[in-house]
Image (cartoon, rainbow, N blue to C red; front, side, top):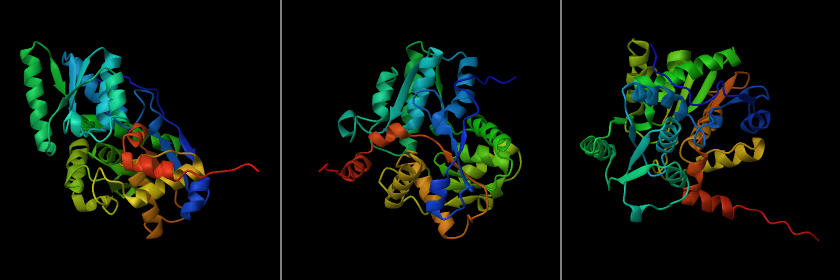
Length: 326
């Protein structure tokens, strides 16, 4: 019996993007956008599909507090806080840094506070440090009489990835002749779920720098979902859009954001969906994706993170054009 809960209305729309397709060198009917940025909870985004499973399991286990980890501008942390609020639970977000070290108190952090989450600042360190701090937080909460449940980084466990198995099946009902699905590859669960539904040959993941070995992470998650051996070299993954690193503005990603916004009015974020669009552009340029093939870009959301990314905000504002009436 499934412990899945409902946190949004499905299916999300699939919209044609003819002007963007033309700008990329594709045919006007070649490119479609799957709008998982329009999930209704907490500002939207792809993590909602995963939280329907992971938060559902937490409820079934009797948890009263959701604990998770992420970057300071984590979309997953924000949506975990939103899910907790919807379900009447507490939320503790374990984030790197200290309050004084955060470069922006805007973006997702604003929504974290509005949604009632508590933040544990874990200091400097990698994902291992965050994971250890989250375990410490859970132990402390238990000592205080709470019943915490630790939601995995990015929601990316075999359980959470089931949300994107469902998304892949949903997409096939909407567009039967999909050749390529392009998606940001962060913690790996979104891509793994799509592969379980659509197969390795149709899903192109664009690595965003969130994990050290993206192919291995996705292969392991996919194997757990499908119960078959999946090798990293069987996956379609682009690693050319990380740039200087996860939190840094990558120029091709910013240009991809600009093209999507000015052709279709679609707003992407600089960390995930902007990099994924840059990967799509590069895939068209090098012939991996060709005109005449039905391509879907999975919009994973992340808009609040744009406002917490100071370099992207600065570049956008300085790009404003003036108009003087005579």
